[in-house]
Length: 260
Image (tube, rainbow, N blue to C red; front, side):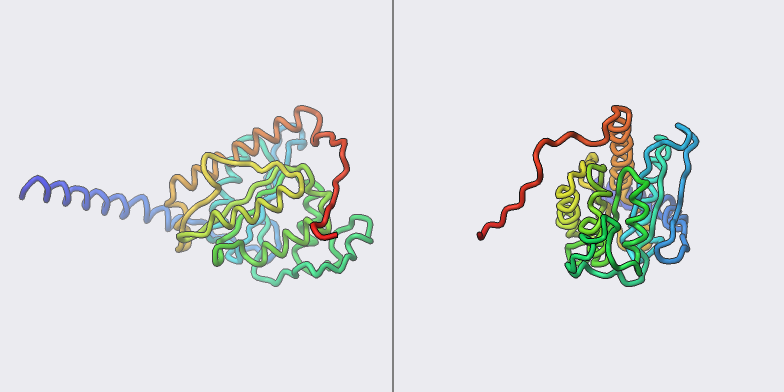
């Protein structure tokens, strides 16, 4: 056996061992979740600050309640809790979410939110009243966010934008291979229109995985989720310790159509 064959066989053996032990263990240890659609997944009531710690709402935009998107949000949640943050994960589930029909009824109900109260949008609207930040996770569908999460976010922001204004936000995209950057751009465009500070990480907030729980094998992706959580906790701490949760703006929002 020459040196080249020896190196090749050694590398193959090492890779096989690595995949056969920690990788398989990671896949088999994925925790299952079983709430009904729209039900709160987890609520961590931190004892610090007498319950006054900032609270982060995490929305799982995947219809799979225990899939790869949930794994990413769970990793973020654990890190947030280490920093004393309150957290809550809500599942979008598999039930239909109405799209915005631009009926204008929400503009005539004194900020009460969308006129349709029969899906998850009403639940998220109510929860945002008590939350200080928002993290939305979505799988990549044809290079775009899940249709359900898009409908949910568009209705929430249009009908109850005052509840998300100035609150830090982040999006997380999970894909098998591609389309994640376009998905992040789509989500971040909504945040930017609402004066929401977009929380970043050491890389784009992306993780890769196809099979159930496979995203946990993306070690850099999981680290990116934890760094995102740390950055979110740091920013919330700065905002709330400073006494002002929003900047003072001396200009009213001006709308201008290109064609007059």
